[in-house]
Length: 212
Ligand code: SF4
Image 1 (tube, rainbow, N blue to C red):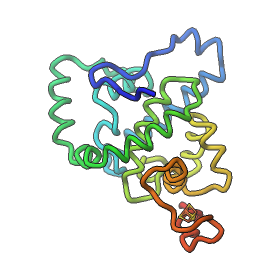
Image 2 (cartoon, helix red, strand yellow):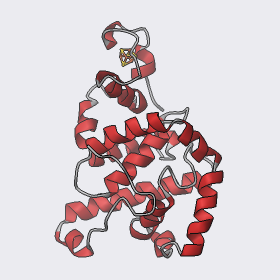
Image 3 (tube, rainbow, N blue to C red):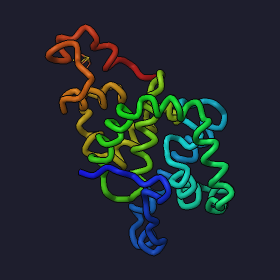
C-alpha cells in the first residue's frame, strides 16, 4: 500500500453539503469530528496537549481542517494565503514538538498507518484524525489527555466512529496507547510484549488499569 502524503496538497477532499443533508448519520459524524477537533485545537493553544501547533498535520491539511471542519469563529478563517504558507513553513520547522515528532517519525508512521488501514471509510476526516491520534501517542500521558480531549470516553467515541474495526477489537478495554502498540507487536513491529499472554503478564495493570 502506498502511504505517501503530499505536503503541499490536502490529504482529504471535501464532501458536498448536499451529501451530508441527504444522510443525517454522516452529518452527525461530521459534527462529532468537528467538536473533537475544535477541542483539540483549543487544548493545544492553551498548552494542555503534547501535540505540535499543527496537531501533527502538514500545514496544508491543518488549514483544510480549520476551513472545512471547525465550528464557529475558526470555521470562517480563510484558506492559507501564499504569504501565510511561508509563515507556516517557518512555524512548522521551528516547532519543538514537531521536531520531536520528526525524531520519532517511524513510530508515528506505524501507528498512523495502523489507524488509516482501519478507518471506517465514511469520511476523509478519518485520515486527519489518524495523523493527529498517532501524534498524540508520542506523548507521555494517557492518550485522551495528550490529545486534549475532555475524557477518555470522548476518545473511545472518536475511535468507535472513525476506526470502528480497531475500536471493537479492543474488547478488553485496554488503554488506547497500549492497545495500538500491542497491535503493532502482533504485526511484527518493534514493540515487544513482556509475556506470552496478557493474563500471565506482570505489566497487566499498566495495560488495562484505569485511564483517568
Ligand atoms: S499486559 Fe503484557 S502481554 Fe498484554 S499487552 Fe500488556 S505488556 Fe503485552
